[in-house]
Length: 141
Image (tube, rainbow, N blue to C red; front, side, top):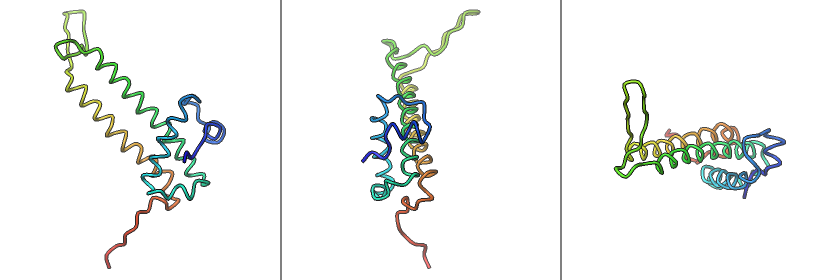
């Protein structure tokens, strides 16, 4: 179930950064993430503003993550045959520095890790007051 449509995104969330063509793809990912972290409880509460707002906020986060990954991917495609990429060049007293495929891979892993924590923080900010993030368990007596 997709929790917010493009009309809601534009008219209620007042989002402007996602184009309508891309919205459905990101909204599907966002909604699946909401289902994952709520253990499916969000579906029964899909009418809550907090769930819809969370979906829209996550859509924008997914777009940011994808854009960052695309930039790193472009960087990866410019790697030379020796497995390095020019990172910077200077003209006065000419110098050139390189970055390796390992550096690019680490950058991609950092994007993934930061993206995961951003997604969770965003979802927590919107959904914590609803109680649907509660996973059970009690404190010891």
